[in-house]
Image (cartoon, rainbow over all chains, first blue to last red; front, side, top):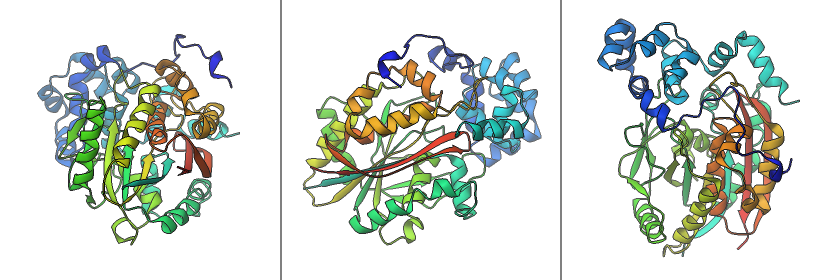
Length: 119
Length: 282
């Protein structure tokens, strides 16, 4: 592997760079997810998801992505994975669950894919 | 005068926090990762650093997008760990070294690095997991050092360049070496290596790239500064940008180092997990 051979501008497949544009787009969604660091916030969300989302001013796209627990849709709506991981935590989903969902694989198949990369 | 004795790096995956809590050290999945640490613990027991500079990236506990510092340095007497939302055990508070923190901040700003100083900072798994790995028992470990957190932004682009990360480490070195007290300092730079949690490319790991980085960082870290941030994401994955922390650590070790130990294993959780110990020569 030679650094001189790298292409510094090629698009990165299957990857959304979380930049200023996405940070503005997803601010409300990410702020809500950031609140889930605290147990009372997680309980409040589970007790009344619609009311909790509205209190953080999520837009319709963001609300629907949360209702569907659809990670790719949450990313498209401006979600950042570090904050979305806290949303996933409410439902006891780990990063393999999240990876499997985004790649359309079973969790077992996704874990097998990770293992194979050590070969 | 203060002295830097070496640098430590490891991945800081949250699942490691759970594995430590459950003592899965001999579990077949975890053993190849945990086996990378006894040699480093032996070195720490021998050299007994007084202070550890713990360079990590916050993942949404200490900072949010309302104010996102590119480089933040803890300037507190104590740092607390808090609930991160997904159930890893919360660690007891960590003792800092506020006097040294302010010396570093003064020196680095004089050196034209624009620092965010933090008199309160909740530290997340990026900070706590490496301390659990290097000093089992934490506060109950007789050799547990005082710790100063330094966090760099990898949450939101634009993130720092690899060149800037290395330069940061070199300025940090100048700061520490100018501290008048006779203390021994070890520098941690943790995170990575290759992994991507988000998008259709989730699960991306790049062994060849990781091993190249672990090789070049020892004797030729400047070569790695030719890698653009965009290319770093492409090769190492969206969260593989945490390799910046390793470059910050490496910069603090001086030009020549001795590689004492390294370990690499795939996968731990979704990540290519690397561990290194480099000893300072100068």
